Length: 412
Image 1 (cartoon, one colour):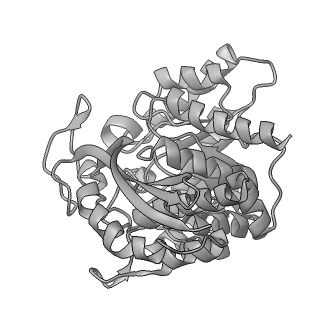
Image 2 (cartoon, one colour):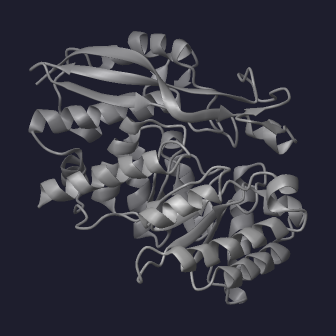
């Protein structure tokens, strides 16, 4: 079966593009907006509406396969590709990507994904923007599945030699700034991992000595114990501190390890994960820092886990962070890896090398990318899968839960 046409449609995402650097430098929140001027190239405001591009493949039999190009909330930060705006990149897809596939036979996902994932955009002299590779490979996986009359998870399992999970992958739900109200929603739904909590500012959210995070952990622990929906409910508490512990403790890794140990005690009886304790500004320093913090935690008998995020953007980064033991868990931030073929490889690599694989992404995705990633989750069995898109809890949780439930039902 051949691909006869590619159609692009501009779209919106489930959240926003945020200028992380401007926020870290003190931009103040004003409702859903931020006051102040952007500092990251490409931004016209500190916060602006997220955009996507739906890539639709028309197949020879008239079937339609599609995926959504999307980039992370903090585009242009931490070594990532620049801001992804639909009007800038639809012409690139139509001019340079479409000729790779139109009129061509559908073969295997891995073979077809490689074309766009390693292809060079002549206009910038390097590989296509991560968001383009992300969305096009989703559409390719869908096209292969439709041509074979299979689920996308089945295609992945067959091509990568895995087995589809016989149970739901633990869902990690994120709260945004509504970390109290949205935590209640997560508890009510029985979220396996919660609440993310968005601790991205020292003064207003973390506390100059980390005291605001401590207060929140205590509150959340008590809230779960009071409201848990069933007796065996035992979620993992996972917070993201966006490198702010490095600011609070002046990159003193001993103090950071001790502080995480204090949070661990406050979280009991629930397990704790702390994402992004430091942001060292570049990859090697980040790996060294996370490895050192992990070592100090292990020496002190601290069982909490730290999660790598910033500066771990590509499949090679995932490999390097794993080899370096830079943390206990790695967030595989799906849009940052470009083609979803890289996401699949990253999860499998982490599992083979005793590193926790957190199949993540961003609130700034779409329902389509979340559904396709649910197939990756069920076919590769990471330790947890992010409820996405958005920060409202209900919508993202529903999308990924229902897609995984459908996969399970069809496999039975």
